[in-house]
Length: 383
Image 1 (cartoon, rainbow, N blue to C red):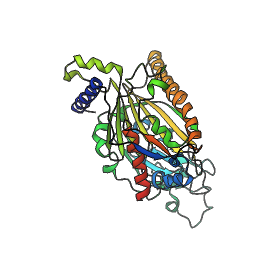
Image 2 (cartoon, rainbow, N blue to C red):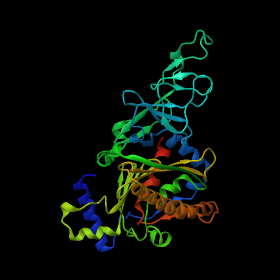
Image 3 (cartoon, one colour):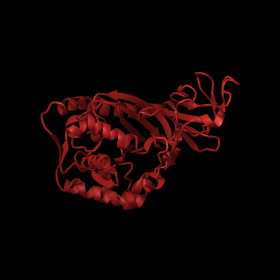
Image 4 (cartoon, rainbow, N blue to C red):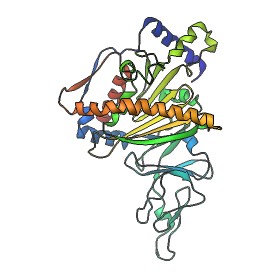
């Protein structure tokens, strides 16, 4: 984020702090409880969001060298992303064209060909089949007829996007919309991946996004964890197409009242939350990045979700002290979100299924929730 944008946003935030105000919607928003409990809703979300839109897979810095790869099954499609010898990314369905075996697992680096662990068919980093095995057993079949099934992939502003459906296209110009330049200013392509944890939790996938879209609950739920760090009940919201940005000020931000504008630093004194539609959160936390990716747990599992949470840091730790610092950040992250928010979320899901009410009531003081859920309903109703 460039400095003029930081100053503009800080002026707004400092005014809010002085006047004890926050970004507001024009009216309350009634969100149907069935959004979290309906199997029909889940089917439409899978079809119109997770099957039809580009999905963020990670940071390009996770694959810095030729042969570096990552795999991801969370969307329901086994995805394989690999960097080729020319430095470009290729994405494929992670399925051998012989008998359907999985080619690679997890993340890592492969030297030379990708070799199927079942019968040894070999593929180049470009997905081309190089060897049928055993030789002579597939007379009349050429290698070109069994190349890996390609998926569209784009690397933009340090982020990797894949369309999970063969033939699906990614419009790079529309991926990040008005946020493209702003996110590019962070330089995430140079960051170092520190740790990823994969969770399976018993609540609807949208609850994970909801968790981050207001800070009114800090005073009650997070008294022992992040309340001492943040000013509760004040945040700056802006819708950016289907994406959004929400800024939550740290208590240290009041130091800027006595500093000239040329010294103002929004990044140091706030948490900046981006929702990259439909299912990814980028959370800037002062000096590092959290990435949350969330998916439904599978067909019919409206009350379960899969979550990847990753910590990305400016540079790989060079000492035990630096490692301890990032470990402390990861611990606080998990204690707050998984230990407090998600513990409560399990009860929320039971409440949704209880028939206690037909709608959740999002207040005027929760505009980010309005924006996110309207974007979902618009997307699944228009397509």
